[in-house]
Image 1 (cartoon, rainbow, N blue to C red):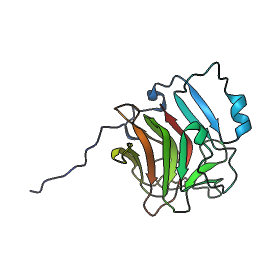
Image 2 (cartoon, rainbow, N blue to C red):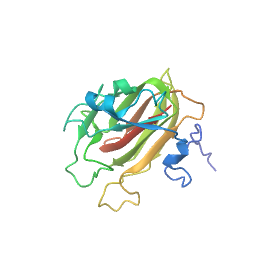
Image 3 (cartoon, rainbow, N blue to C red):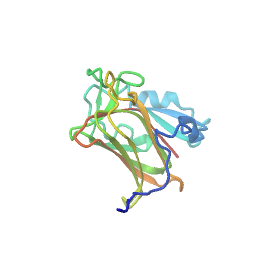
Image 4 (tube, rainbow, N blue to C red):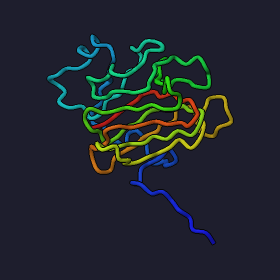
Amino acid sequence: MGKQATLQSNKLPTIEDAKFALDKFNIQSEIKASAWQGQVESAIDPAGVTVPTCICLDLEDLKYFEAVERQYERWGVIFHNSLAIQPSNPAFPTYSGLTVLMGAPKSGFLEATFLRPVNSVSAFVTSSQRLVLSAYDRDRQLLAQTALPGSNLANSDSIISPNTLLSILSITGNNIYSITFCAFDGQFTLDRFRFCF
């Protein structure tokens, strides 16, 4: 009889956990963050907002095939290996709007670094392969991982629907400094990228 080894990390909600939903973040306020500078000033009343609880990125101001890196830096996040696209392949539908993020030019990988540590990150994902979301602390030590177990392309025989919410939550407070999405030898899209303090 062989022994079975299991990888254990902080117990995090996964997409299989029916009790976990977007509202479990205990969100008190959310700011929709735009890449366009002019819209940002008119969207926020500084007298009425102290520190937002969550920021949800509005991708619609990004140009088609625009490399996304520092467009949301003022909101506290910098992307690496990220491209804004308007999917022409119906297998990758958007969740809302027309624009999504895709890992490119290196396919199957996307990283986000936070200027201020956060306690949760989520996005609606569609992937051609198993997709792993990993969270790291200040020293690039792995805090937690969660995964989309397999492909969820539209019009496929997948039991997972496209644009599935993939989330990661730190149970020890605001100590997520960066996250990665990785689909080995695959393609994926992200919509409604959101992070909370």
